[in-house]
Structure formats: structure tokens, C-alpha cells
Length: 255
Image 1 (cartoon, rainbow, N blue to C red):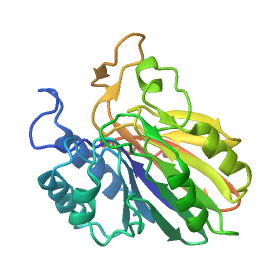
Image 2: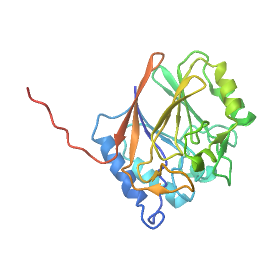
Image 3: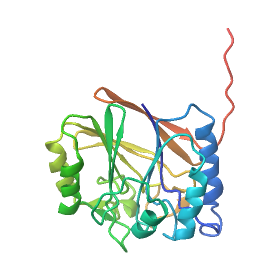
Image 4: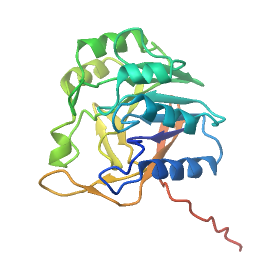
């Protein structure tokens, strides 16, 4: 199965920080996705919009409306749960206050875990998240777990300060769930590959601005944006490709 993971779109109607055209960046990424074979799923792991406004969500919906393949959304710290549910009512939102989802895809499942703490940039796993995971996690189907804030350090002090708390609770839960094969995150605006609780862990970049690799206060950089393409054989392997959002020409070798 092929899963395209976009993250941290920060869609807004005006240039972000006065210089980042997040809508144009998202359009570029979508063009690149559409130029390839259609994926089985488009997964967007949080910070869908910049200000959590309904008009921003409607702008996102207008861009996704023509897709020929399904998409699944997960909130980040810039999102608003009520607005997300209102504009995207067909998404398989959980019955509780969280905007979690279980998406069954072929022989596997994706668990989209809402770790948002309203009003805060950091996320958290609490008993509320664990209760949903207990109910949603299949007993035998292979699983990919997705959440916005990563529950591990990435080596950027400003981002590590606003990572997902409750990582010990999540690690304990994973210890008894061999069906969970990997963890997919966003929030950091950079491609990061590591492991968490013995599983592969991937962080998707933003199609727009990236977080600078530097000490001190958080800063953004206009390095090229991108997304991740996951080739997943449930029960066997997860292969992840980093894809720049800018379109590239393909040159065929002729021998």
C-alpha cells in the first residue's frame, strides 16, 4: 500500500510571517502527488491550517475535493476541533471530544491519535488517549500509529520543549501491542527518522517552511518543502521516501 503523508500545511489566506505562501506551497505538493501513481491514502498529520478558522478549513476542503483517492486528517496545535468536525463531517471522528480516527486500509489499519492540548503548542498522551487506543486498536491487523507532536527528542531545543508529553505512558501501551509497526508524526517541519519504543518513527516535513537546525530560539527557513511517501506491506515492512514538493523532470536512461 502507498500512503502519502503531508504535514504542517498552515493554510491561511495571507502570507504567513509576511513571507511564506503556504497555500502555494500546498498546491505545489499536491501537483507533485497527482503527477505520480495515485496513493491508497493521503494522510495529513496536523496543523492543517494556521489559525483554526472555518474559512481556512473550507479552503483546504476546496483543494481536496477533486482528489480521486481518500484522505484522512489529524489535528495539530494550530487546529480547532469544532471547526474541523464542522467542515469535514464525513471523516470518521471518534465519539469522544478528541478528533481521533481509525482508518482501515487493505490488510492494515491506521490509528490517528489526537494529542492536542487546547491553547498549548505541546501535546500530551493521557488516559483519555489510551482509552481510545484500547478501543480502536485491532487485535490482529497490522497498525500504523499517527500523531501530530512526536513523543521523542529531535535535537532542536525549541521543538523538544513542545513535543508530546506522556511518552512513558505511550511507550508502556505500545509494549503490549505488537501489531503497531511504526509511528508517523509531524509538528517539527523537518524530515526526521528515528525509533520509539522499538518501532520505526518518521516525522514528515512541511511542504512550506522548515524549522531551522540551530541552537537558541526557534526559527524558520525557506528550505524546499516536501512530504513523505510510505510504501507499507502490513506485517512485513515500512519503506519511507522523502519527496521534495517541487516538481522534477524524470530523465530515462537509455543504454
